[in-house]
Image 1 (cartoon, rainbow, N blue to C red):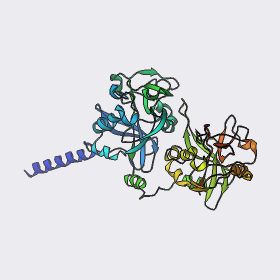
Image 2 (image 1 turned 90 degrees about the vertical axis):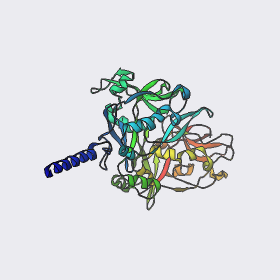
Image 3 (image 1 turned 90 degrees about the horizontal axis):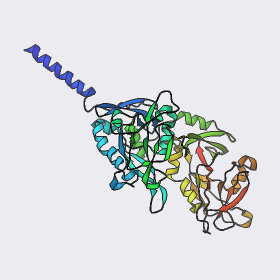
Image 4 (image 1 turned 135 degrees about the vertical axis):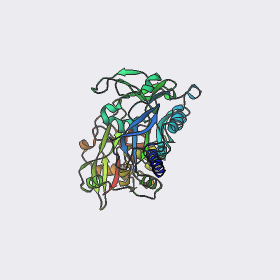
Length: 434
């Protein structure tokens, strides 16, 4: 009797241990040591374990993208055919049915709720705007695909699961890869160039970006992504301001070794290109203080107008360009959390285009990012040949004596002036802490 009781107890303990290790409540495969390039098994769909690759890191988080195109779905049903990502059918599916069916309770707890930023077409303003939402699971944006997926070579190709094939996803022969022979296209969350009707996508055969993409009511490949906690206390603490960033020794060392005249890589830009190019941004060190360096981008970080050309009161302080480059959207696009923490607010005094003529530069401002004015350009870069960008024009923040006009630098490096309504380059300057 005693032996039988002991055997039953051992069997029960063994069953409980199996449940703890591999049952319904098992946690994710992500750990504090997870880094870009690592492969993770997390979740299950249609009887198959889901495999993901870590493609980027945040503060206490890691970005996972599914190794394969998991399903074939419409971006939008007919009832909301023109809706952008925030109100789309596929967003509702990924953050509802998919999230609940594919993951255990423990796995869902490990997925961070993330603010996503999407290029969406505003039909009333008739322009593309930045639209934000909070998602657990999402499709990548064009910029995220360029930044996180393009460096991984063949990972850009959407290899379909059997479930996606059964659901009718279209496949194509792949060119330019020895490892992947056939792939399908996969949808991005940005609106395409056909305004509200299409979403951008990565093409199956080429792995390139299609800015036109596919009609939102047509079935297409879905490749989910999600940010997963590696250290929830750190991630939540940093988000709500109760925890600081962990040290980034490589960045600290790189900045500490700078001197005036050096060039330094700082931040990265996803170029609007079919080849999904993401490149480092390089800067020239113009000046130094006791605890910071003034740096100036080698090329424009996008193009924007200063404002309306008929506004005589327009100055740097109330310009559209100033608001744009100091927005969270702009800063988050180019710089990671450790780089953002290095940017120091600067007190900016703007001179007019011709100070001796009494041109008013406008109110003094406090900016994270700014453009050089005419005086600073002459001080830090007096040689015209060294400051021109061939076939390009970039703004200075100095207003001209003509109402609604500003100084700009032409391709040969000469200073001229033009209407504030032109979309010229934004060659950005900022102070970064040592």
